[in-house]
Length: 243
Image (cartoon, rainbow, N blue to C red; front, side, top):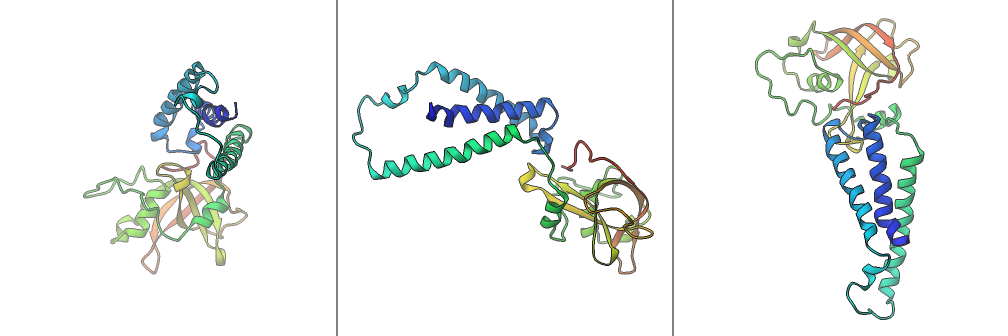
């Protein structure tokens, strides 16, 4: 029974969790929605295989060779210990997936991952020629644009309406932030946009979600930033990440 739990048991639990997250539209808290169909499809196939495996009597796999391997060696004892240790860890992960509700990565973690550079893959799949349509740009797109624009004046005056969480820096500086995911939360990268707000951050605390409206401006150093016209507090959106 122990070996069956470590195999189809844990796999079945994780498959059920994956399917449940898909049905409740919360799988995007862990992976890019573009890959959700694959994850859910594999979970369904795995669950079918797990159910089918019960047609195999317990212990029959140990007699498949038709002979005895003799007394357990020291190496096999080490292997058993490693299996037990791995089983305990795997069981803890599976049970945690069931017990704890899905949650987004915290603003503090996003700040820890912030290297000061734009997300690596933001806009990498877009080939843009001529005049760029920025109407659908998110925080990640603008972050990449701010970092790579060779003619920043091209974007001066562009209106923006963006959603993200705020972070306060030294000297009363303010930024609008969002985590950008390529495949899953493991590769989540923070995107950050400097914001000029009259009166500074005010009573906004790091991690609070806002909807910002304003326009792109070029500062005295030739760098792009956002001049905020308004920032309204909002609840955390159902899709807190950009993809």
